[in-house]
Length: 383
Image (cartoon, rainbow, N blue to C red; front, side):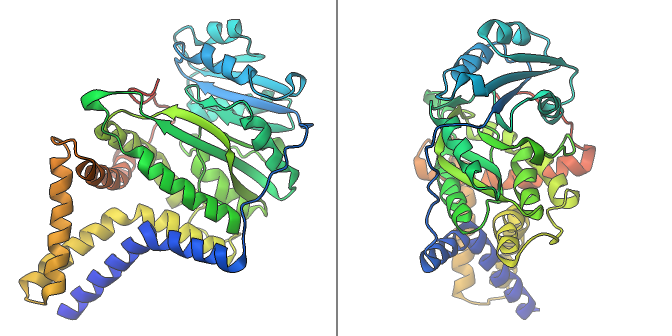
């Protein structure tokens, strides 16, 4: 019995450490070993027509600024088509988008972001289709830089770098998403250098119009597009010089709710959306999917197994190493609990880690219990 518990303990600990830290270190070592450098996307004069699509639901407060931001991009106006796809808007989003200068404004029944994007792509005239959120702000050269990635005919999908900014101040400004996201971007950059990324983001990305995929409306592009591009023989790349920014949810608790909602859309992709099928993956990319996606999503279960095995081993007098491991795990939970009352950075980081890890399981529970709606509302404090 003790041997089985020790196997569970060490295997769970190893898999958690691998997906959270070891994988990134292995990518860095591999990139150094094979001399994989970050691709240099040439800043040539743009020649490709682009349809920039903004799906919006009740975004009257920010849509005019978004249209102005898009029209101010350093990209030839004759090659840029701006489409605002209104997903069942009940406010002034459509009217304000038209007044601000959007080329096309689609007023659609509520069907969710994905179906609004599908409708916009069918209407689009550009060779490339780019996508952004209504609350995202792009740097002037972002589109030019993003489009340059498609000079490589092997590239089917490109996403830029989004920076999350803390708009709130005071007691509510506790979210540590920025710290996590900087680490995630570093990992994503290494994946792109070595093979292809395993996930994108909704704030700034693009694909060839003839490569666009119409997926289940509950399955977001962020996760479903990159691995499907690889399965079709294309690359999904990260273009860090194409920069955008978005307001983050002010509180850690708000981030938990946001990630819980996101994971209810993620689990269908994992379970029945094709991610689990190895068909179309080479060995390197398959290892990336397992390491960065599947094991990351399994961390709640791995933590529970580790904690349970630690308690049982300590109770059986198995040794000091298990006692130390149990103390460290309980200390993490205690720090996360204190982070709700004491605004010390280490405590807030612990609280962020525990709650966002829990959100992975909570999203699975929500999906299994009552399914996932195709539509959702903006997270509090992000507009």
